[in-house]
Amino acid sequence: MQSSNSGQTALEQIIQSIINFNSEEIEYARAEFAR
Image 1 (tube, helix red, strand yellow):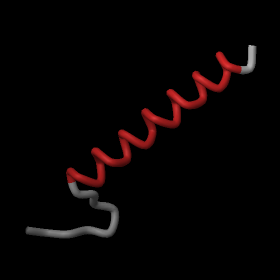
Image 2 (cartoon, one colour; image 1 turned 60 degrees about the vertical axis):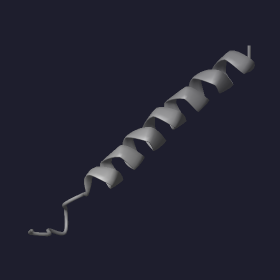
Image 3 (cartoon, helix red, strand yellow; image 1 turned 90 degrees about the vertical axis):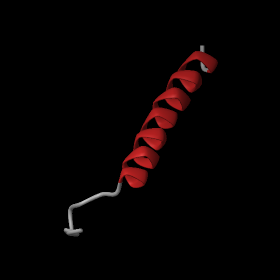
């Protein structure tokens, strides 16, 4: 198994996608709440 500095594990990719999804959802909810 090779490792590179820019490489991500599958788990890290999943976590990152969850964080990105959650932040988008939070921004949407905040915009809705601000009306």
